Image 1 (cartoon, helix red, strand yellow):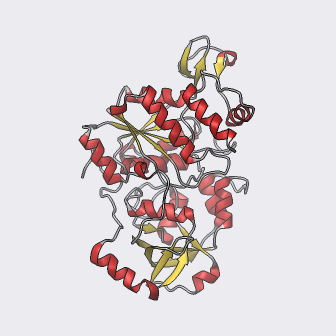
Image 2: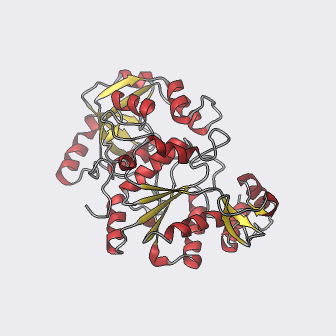
Length: 386
């Protein structure tokens, strides 16, 4: 296996069918029952197919689903914190039979994959919300999606026959085999991953460079799947990452790639999920900052750190690097965290997302202590076009 760390479960899954097998599936596709799936499901499907969600080979059947919701483990005991499900309406479920192959299509009716339907089952949305998101509040974006989806789940292995028709950011869409190969070619053995759904500001940069002091390379791995409507679009964020790497990072020690996953905003559980996924991409270390994958006030500031204590380190297999809240201190004249700075908040420069949006809308430059000027310029132009 290329790379210095084994995938979760020991083997990198590959559910992409090619050649004669693909031709045979396409030949009988017209005779299969079919369902159209959302962009969110397509994201999960793609990541299952390329092994990013190893050892999972399809959408979860009932035993795995219940075990993940209740215990953060697959039925075989392996840690896994987020259920991967394929929901349909009750009417759709009635037309499908367990044991048959179902064709999965995108919203334009292009055939993407087949599902070998092992099981269809009902589930308790309120219980999943409470366990996974720690709230039943419909204002939570993850809970909102959960409550709006179908009432029956389909479980079974998938086989990808066509890649989803993505047009955005093709050169950065690296799968686990590709990232592992690059790490090997660059002779990196200690690789730290950074998860983000936002442009990188000075605090993020500080965390990454601290981690780079102890690693051979850094994987900047932004989420580009479905996010909240007020999150900054992926193509804008990529411009910000590119200009930062060009001007402020050692380019031979950084790899930029995108993760086409949907954000769940599940806080602590999503921190475990994100760590296991980066392990599958070949990373040995994973940065966990303040309120990782959080939203609103649903999670404690460092709950995403504490949840790792619920597992043995060898079970997770990737080393989490925990960082406190980072910011610029005018008294220290440096980027610091709550662990390293003794000064009161009056000296600290850190902006909320709301304050950043307010400054940009009013065409005011973001403080240099908060973000690099090149990034501020890109964000300003993006807001001017809205």
